[in-house]
Image 1 (tube, rainbow, N blue to C red):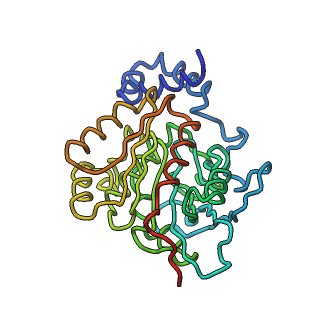
Image 2: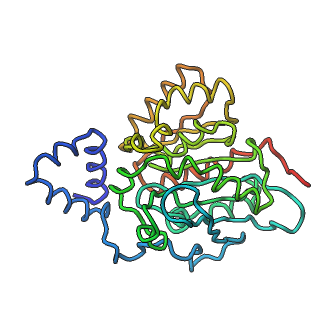
Image 3: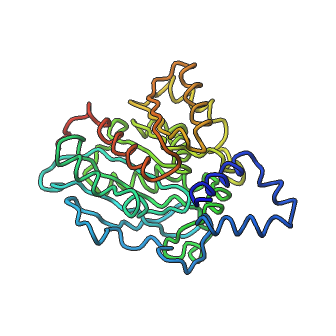
Length: 323
């Protein structure tokens, strides 16, 4: 069986809560763990590329500037985290302010995932230089939950199971303060709702959905790429963050609606049914959004295309904001 097929089966099993049955039958647990290891869902800490590493691909020199930005965390866990910031070509040459695109990774990801696997530098450079998208600052934070500095371990990758089980709303609750406000203080940004976009893949899609719903005044554009909603995220101190999504979505669209909302998923994606259900709910409620269905499944080839598509659509009405 192909590894991608096996990984899809495992995610489907987890989505339907079969994991509980597996946990009850201890004789199946070793086989389950072996399957996870074989398809890359679980990795050992000594595995290659386990840490975020340098933010620039050696084989590609971006036209824009890429910088790593450490920042203090205001929630329990490591005292300092890191985000990667892409500044478009020409940034700083004049007192022009730029919109900001916040881009979140998924399970087994970190702040350089969109650079290493998502080819974000090539995509942004190409679209911006050819006038196909509004030049913007792109911010890629590490959205994993870590217990402390040792667990953080130089911004290490989280295995998929860790990501799924540990999503609890802590990092998300602090996102406007720790990330958005800091970015606005450090860079020439359009520091208002219509100047900000937010998107994420898989678990990052879920985080994006709830960030936008909990803070509707912050993000003007929202993109959910194969959003994986089947994570725990409802226990602990910050459990309210991941509760009552439809109620929050209703308030978001009735009180402070976004400029645009995008749902993007593949027909063979394991999260296609839940994404389709969200689309149907939003359609039934009359909430404006775009629903895009592509071929393929839960993979980077789709997510790269979704990102490029969304970049060409956002900030079109913002224009250039000069000081």
